[in-house]
Image (tube, rainbow, N blue to C red; front, side, top):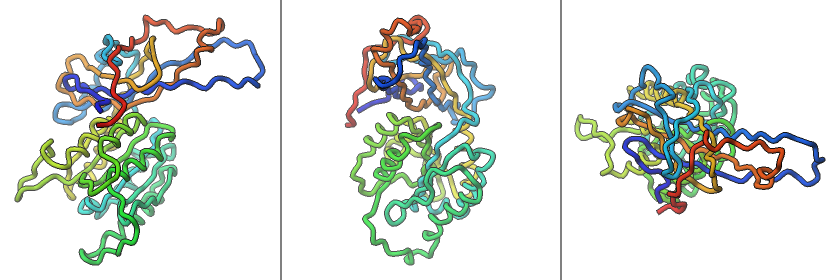
Length: 350
């Protein structure tokens, strides 16, 4: 399926609308004026054509969105993500082990410049099976150093002396799918950072299922990988090789895939976290004619046809019909909200 569609270089995202729970019948009826906050916040990664930060920051009046190919709507407000709380899961794949000689210290050093105790971190390794060494804990320098070490040190042995695996192997797409299900209900901005060569070796899940799930769950995937090499020439990632699904998962979820070398690994990790913190948070009202389900959202920036624009999916609650019909409910002004179109996205991966 295609939950996301390109419009020029502006990428559509996923808007999930869910019905809110009806208040319990046992609650005491208290006269209340109902005013519902229906503001959508959509994290959006925006870079220049050559994947650099755009300076000065883009004026909020240049951003527009549309839902299900409805009319374009200028967003209400745009702000930098900055220090918004993040739920970050990091997946380390030994296929990218050449990037990891100093990884424990490099990840630990993300505190305090990019991570703080308000941010929660989980750590996973794809060694013998899928190992979790840290489960949704506040970011702490010493803890990250110790827990990343626990994952990567068993891999730092001479070739041929790796520990014998007795567990059922877990492959890349299945690992990403499991991590995404663990993250779906976590607070804050949800992000998966993956170090891998991007090649799956036999998952039950198809890559497109993982792509669709992280979109609906509002999880951005940032990938770091080894570039392809031909003699001494680095070959960029292209649609003609088997790393392309990894590229698609990253970009279609609102992230990016970054090739790097061992010498540039630390700088690439810092750049990935800077991109995360520099995302634009687009704010706009819930569509005036919202319906429950999965919807496509496109982002357009005036004069930015060549920008790299990658929004992340969001889920927005819908108020109960009975509440909307309550005379004490203050209705929203439909003229100040986007109008949902009739071109719905498919909901079953190909």
